[in-house]
Image (cartoon, rainbow, N blue to C red; front, side):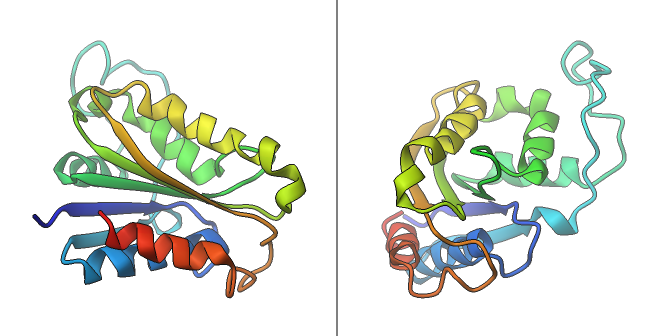
Length: 181
């Protein structure tokens, strides 16, 4: 059965290494017959959470007039959510963290979603243990949801500058993981 796949790419560079991995995942998922959509967070206006409690205490939509609400709706409609990020100082990008912080209201409605994590890092495999912290960061969000299932994780190491992901084994891994949804 075809699934609705939403990919949140948080690279600050269009065509950056993590963004390219997201594209490969999407290509595999689409070839397998799934409906796919990628949201490039850099292109969206997403403000920081102000802690106003409108969403959490009053159960009303966030009063900020930006692109976050539209992305929340896509997340709620998705069966599969892919969180793609470059690794900065062993953590997710600011673009992804800013967006996830805005999920205070709608996170309680995100039940039974499948998740995949995609990350790329400049550091090589010798720092892999430290780089794995990025997945702990992402799990901080997913662990707050009801019945999430993390189906896969990809970490490409030794890729910093645009295009360095080409030829990296993570490219094939992303494509194949997308095909297996």
